[in-house]
Each structure stands twice: as C-alpha cells, then as structure tokens.
Image (cartoon, rainbow, N blue to C red; front, side):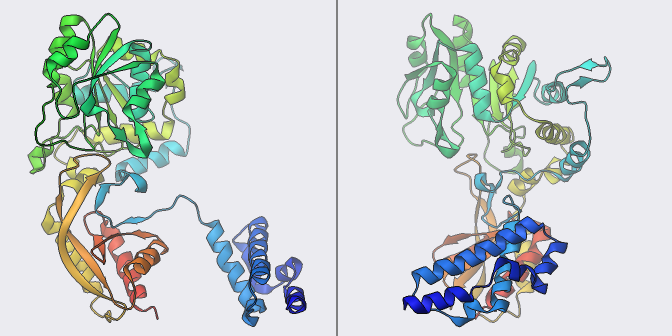
Amino acid sequence: MKNDKQIWFKKIPSVDGLLLDPSISALFADYPRSLVLKAIRLVLDGIRAKLIKEDMLVAADFEIKEITQRIIQKVELISRPNLRHVINATGVVVHTNLGRSILAEAVINRLETIGGGYSNLEYDLSQGKRGSRYSHVEDLLIELTSAEAAMVVNNNAAAVLAALDTLAKGREVIVSRGQLVEIGGSFRIPDVMGKSGAKLVEVGTTNKTHLHDYEEAINLETGILLKVHTSNFQIIGFTHEVALSEMVKLGRAHGIPVMEDLGSGSLVDFSKYGLTKEPTVKDVLKEGADLVTFSGDKLLGGPQAGIILGKKELVSAIKKNQLCRALRIDKLTLVALEETLRLYRDEKTLMETIPTLKMICQPFDLINKKGKRLLQMLDEVIPLNFSITILDGFSKVGGGALPSMELSSCLLGLAPGRLSTGFMASWLRAYNPPIIVRVEKETVLLDMRTVQEKEIVILGQAIKELAELV
C-alpha cells in the first residue's frame, strides 16, 4: 500500500504545471497572482493530506480537470470578504450577531460622500482652526432630548466606563442588586464598574429594592446613585424597584448625582404605536437624571455608539477625561450617527426612514403580504425535499430591548421531507448571500418581518434551488 501511495504522490501535478493550464491562467484577469497561488497550494496540500490519511483512493481526485475546478472554487471562496451581507430571516430585528440595526438609506448616502473625501471632522470652518468632533452631534442631541450637554463614545459600555471613571473613581457607586445585568458577550455591569475604579455598593435584593436601602448606604464616599434599566430581562411577581424620581430627590438632598444607564435608549414612545411602553431618553432627563447613557445602534437605529447626555458640568468633566480619546468614535460612525439623528427631526416620516423602527412597528398585514408574495414564487416547487407552509408567529425586537414583547409576524415554514432541518438551515447559510433562519419544532422558519423587500426574490430563488437538490 505504501508503494501504491508513492505512485499516487507522483501523479499530483506541480504548481508550475497548473499555472500553465488555460483555466487557471484565465483567473489572473480577475484575481491577484498571489491569491491564485495560495488556492493552488491549499488544494494540493489537501490532496496530499488525503493520501496520507486514507487507504481508499479515488482516481478522479488526480484528474487535472477535477483539480483545476477545485482551485477555481477555492479562489472564489478565499477572495470573498470576511464581513458579508446576509439575509436576516430570524425575525430578530436588532440582531446582535448580525450587525444590529440596518442604517437608513440617507445615512448610506452620506457615508459615501464623507468616506470618499476629506471632511471637517475636527476643523471649525467658521474660525479656520481646530474644532471638536463632538460638536457635529451635540447640538442635535440637545435639540432632540432637551439635555444640557452631550457627547459620544464608541459604545454604551464605554459611555458607562467614562462616566464612572470621571465622576466616581475611588468612590462608591450605589446600585440595586436586581439591576446588576450582564450585557452582550459576557460583559457585566459590575465588571465595567470595576474597570472604572469605582467601588460597587449593592443594595436591596434581586426582586425588591426600596428607597431606604439607598439612603442607608449613602456616606461621605458615595460618588453616584446608579440606576440600570433592565432592558434585556424582566423580573415579575413579588417585586419592587425605586422610581427614578425618588432617587433624584434623594440625590439632591445629599448632593449626589444620579445616573441612569438606559442600555437600549429610545427617542420614540413605542406605546403610540400599540407596543409596550419603554422609557424614552427625554422622559428620563425630564425626571431629573443628572446623566443618561444609551446605545446608538439598538432602538435608536443608528451605528454602534455610546451616547452620554446630562448636566453641562458633568458632561464637560467627562469630555476632559483622557480615557475618552481611547473611546472616541471615528468619522464614519460620527456621520452615520449625525444623519440618523437628523431623521428624528421629522416624526411624520420617522417610521419609514429608519429601518429598525419600521420593522419593529410594521403592521402584520404588510408582513403577511411579503409572505404571500414569496409563497407565490414557490408555486411550482415539488414537495419532495420539504413541504412549504405559511404560519402565523412572533418576532422579537432583540438587542437586549423589550424582552417580553412579541411582535405578530408571518413565517414561511419548510417542514422536512428528504432533507432534514439541520441540512436545510446549513445549506441556506452557505448560500450567496447567506440566509440566516431559525429552527423550531423541526421546521425551518423564515420570518418575513426582518426580510427586506429587495431580498424576497433572492429567497425565492434559494428555496427553489434547495428543492431541486437530489
């Protein structure tokens, strides 16, 4: 067998020989030579590895036509960008793993303009000298929320970190035990606080915290009273938490600032659209919070950013913190945030111009129409690999926001036939563009709430190809 393998090793074509093959040399018109060489070596290394590992050899593995075809496929595969557009058919609107919020068309257009040229990022056009990057969004944030001052860092965890490092480093921060949440990627509020140098003081119990718990914990070392909005979970039943207005009154009496981390902060009152009431940023500021922090890429519907609003003297102090240079946002994030905020000026068109808000508030009838349109495209599909049904179901807001709220939706279900649910979900993920679904009760589900209009045709084609697999 060893001698047989030596014969097969000799049959493996050389790199130079493959480079002369017309189908390989044709690749140089579209791909760099280095990338083609990499693909050749990967394919040949794969053949050698198979020879070493396996006793059963297939002659077709050594045919030039078969090898060149593999090389072409490998070139296409390794030339793809790692960060790719995918179709979100999961029904989770603010999907953390899929890039959270979709940016508005107006934002995309501005990104192209600013990203393709120079800008006045830190240049004051009126004075002809260095300016502040924060000024591009500060006025808009003040206008939309009535805050005294505003600044922006690269995400909400950074916003909390910068605020606590500035105002409570080496001092105590009092927070309810029921609010010590874990956010995405195993990042926990106590850990973020620890990195800031602040000392965590837990009060109350998991399900009940009273005003006197805060009052009894206050001493000369207290730097901040912190309220964390539990936007990614809910405790129900025998519960009690202290209202922000009560905390503000207590803070004023002791000269201690009150800060609220809203997490998925919103500028829109969702109860106007028949959905669960969620405190808005403006509401929190109106109740007297000295500082508010929240994300720019969740319910706001913009890019990843951490927004800090509040009293002018507190925000000014945070701006001077050297830590903020390490946490600052770049010009593309800044322009995306600015343009998103500009859209909030027109409440009449807001639900149509910001994709996240549009998907969250989209009525069932419109989603159902998308489902029926997709189903009509699949009329001629023969139900051997799977059967197709239209189902009523529920979507989620996602991103740690409004965890208990279910949004009525229309789902396209693929029930197993010759193909299993696992195979179908995997095959759809490997499609170009990848289609991300959810699997429930042995059915592949495509939730039409998060499928964009322009993606319906792609879904139809993908499902037809899946149905034709043998």
